[in-house]
Figure 1: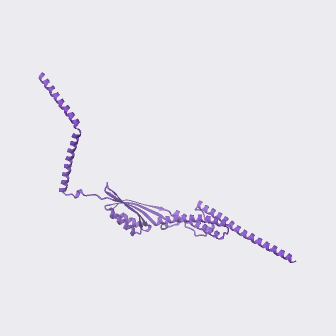
Figure 2: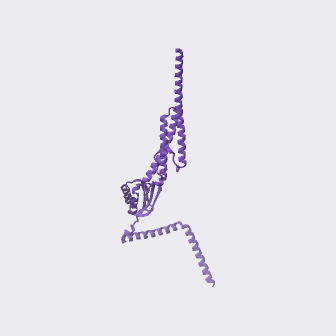
Figure 3: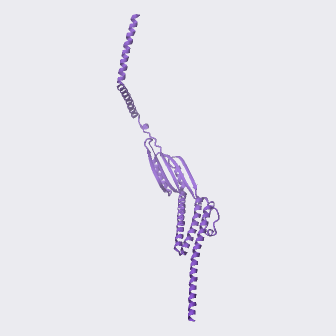
Length: 305
């Protein structure tokens, strides 16, 4: 009797242990299966969003904070990159450069590049300044540059509206963050090493995409917040040295020029004679002989008559 009860008890314990192992295995299988199914769903949704950003989001993404569309932004809210190219002619280049550099600082901007070049043949100088100025001060700054000292040769202002690109990046960033949140949740639930490796690989890829999107958004934001201004300054410094000379100095210079001209002519004649001496001697001899021959011929004809 006791042996039968002991056998029944052992059989019952073995049966319970087997059921627990099956249950654990089933739970792990369901967890991995759930990750694989959800991963497929995430990839499908992300591919659908990249294929057509204008389609409606899935129900889970709709629960997240929605990003406003680009056409709903006001004029002041739009992301516009402004660039200005200006050319100015001045009499004092160094003074104008110092004035512009001070003006840039006054409008909370900063200088990206400042250079100066001299043309020794033309006897003039050119300066270049590249600056970044806050967009809120951009218009007043350009008015100061145009109305300042010097002659405005040209001025070109262009704007590039990147609101649509910025909104699209913001929407993609929200989607990637949803995927990142899911993967982190699956990583906490996973128990097998192969599952952790698979989830870690997908998570690293998503986080890299998030960094790329964030970097592009920061670049566009910086370009929109600070306008870029290129200024070329040309110096037009006319020399009046000749007009400042008095009559006596002008007479002396003219006399010296005349003497130099005569000396130059005499020098050229001397060089011509000395250099062509053999030819000149030959021509002189031939001319003398010809003159004698003609003289004799004339005398002979005169006697015959």
